[in-house]
Image (cartoon, rainbow, N blue to C red):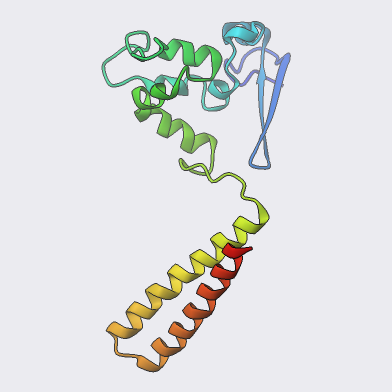
Length: 170
């Protein structure tokens, strides 16, 4: 098996990561692994490798080198990010915002964190989403003067609202 970077030498280092249920593999020869810092845990950024061997360069604003861009709050640079794969403080997200959105889109399903929701709250959120949808349909039905349909939607909205109130009091 050849190295994924140089495509010349035999791969001796094999990295595997599972993202969103999909397995991603990177196979490196010893020299490329050393060059990318795989043998030095402090300089290794698996995210950088998996994102296209240097995708973290996108953090640079146009025309500036990565070491020139520095977070005013913590002093973190793009070079520090490449080494650790992490940012130094919350302000870093604003300083490196342009490149981070590209990286986040490549690494995750989207830019907005969805997270997990406890069971009861998830049901309330689901009902809230249905309620908003029905309210939109009701508004459209009234605008189109479909009053029978609007009355049915109004009744569904009232039923959902009573379910939400009952869940809130529990």
